[in-house]
Length: 227
Image (cartoon, rainbow, N blue to C red; front, side):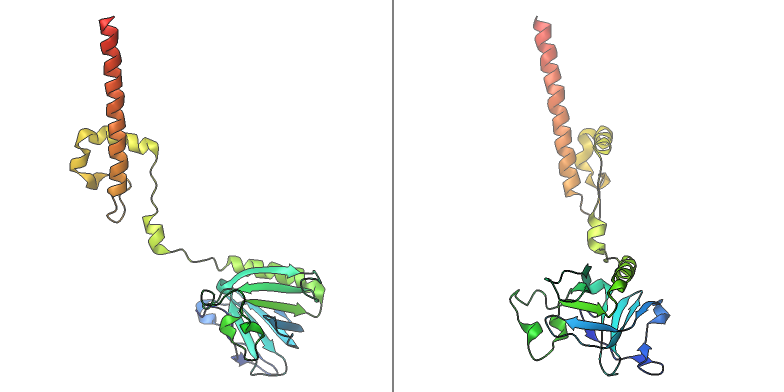
């Protein structure tokens, strides 16, 4: 997957054509909206064009120039919203924020988006302006639906190391292992990919706490015996 906005020129069909989708991997077209202008960063709107929303990406294709088109995967869209505030932007639109590979390298004050040379890898904002503003809510709902189909991937390594044990399990383990726990740490609860040091430390503390409690009880019995 290419992170961020990218050029898209693969079309099929007569006239302006439609985008070629990855149907072999289950990509399906969800919605087509004609007469949509696109604004990249702080640049002027480009129109006319047609917006195609699939289960995996958002594609805008120019109606007059078959070599001009843009696409972004839903996994690269960090935010999408309906914008109707004229102070934020003169035309009602769908506003999106795009994650890019250059995010960490670019400072917030970068003017790369408004320079003469268009560098798609640094475009972090995109606006989609339908000629009919009443379609904004429909477009937003479809964006939401498709975004839910593309959840953020979970880091497998973090998932493997996320283990939790309850206080009841800890007490049960202490009762079973007793003073012999330190001799066989591989049987400790919460053992995950060889990371048993933390579980062992916690359980040893629990054992020591139990010893202190037993010692206190013995002292109390001893004092009552003297009385």
